Length: 166
Image (tube, rainbow, N blue to C red; front, top):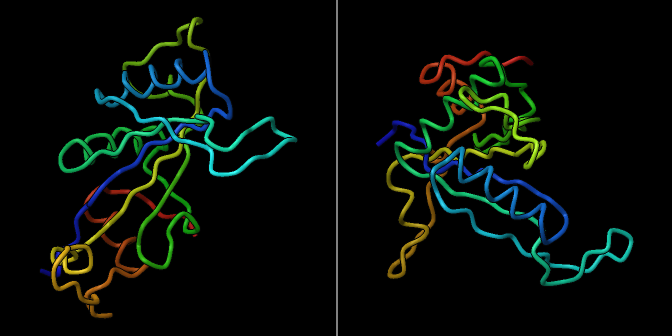
């Protein structure tokens, strides 16, 4: 019950507008993850950026289980298996950006699509976290069972062989 695992990996592309660019971003996520992306919707209005509330401004894919770990290995390969220490939060989760989808192995530049970068967010958990999410008899997770930043970094070093640069 003390072992860590990758609960989910979320891959997000923020476009900032609906239309042609959003469709191209969805196509990129579909090629990379073999999973249908979901549109992300604006929560606020920003007149300077031309964004209205309820307007689709990006897309994301949530990967779990084996798919999440496979994609994470490919994304870390793009980053040369190096992450900065500030990428990790106090709960052991981490995020990083990939500047261009063509840096993934086997992907080629398509002039019709263009260049899209993406954000990758990874959530680490221990088994037993369900007690905080279940419908009946929810309870708090003890402090000793929560993941710390130090444990998250050590898990990534051991499991994926990455180097954390402080």
